[in-house]
Image (cartoon, rainbow, N blue to C red; front, top):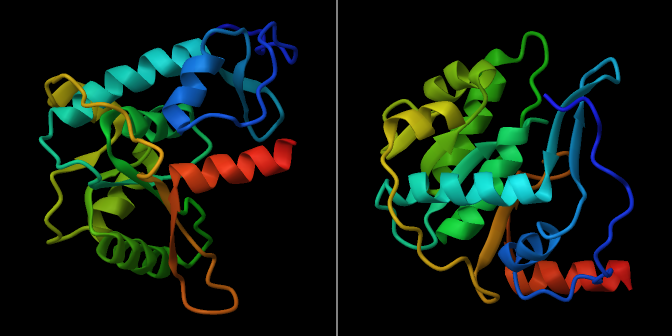
Length: 209
């Protein structure tokens, strides 16, 4: 692994979210020098992922997801752990014309059953056809998905090893779903929020301007 984090400063001209979709934004970022740096619980650098590498990896995973034969806009559930594979697969969905559904990665002592039940509710309500998680979470995800009609369940590595590549369709467009995120459920029942590409880009533009 490269032990140097990606730089903070970028040679690319700053663009305040004026993109039509996430795939277009990553295409632009990939021509620069910056990226994502991942740190472990002790503050040590555990992984480095430039935007150029992220784009390449995401497009490769997009071809794997396309190999599953999913219809455009199908939901892909991703356990949102702080892991490079999560962001690779999130953007792979963008390039494959699929809608990522972010699932919580938090589990506390003595809450195994509650977490599994929560995952099952989210998988069911989102109508996910694929579910992917880091190795540590796949037993829980497998338990939660019992008898659900998923096309694939496993890790990113298993997706790469078990599914043949097929050409990916055009990336998600401005009017299509960027992702589905669930509310925390602290004040009312958990609800899914559908965020379109256009709404996301508009929000980013407002924040950055």
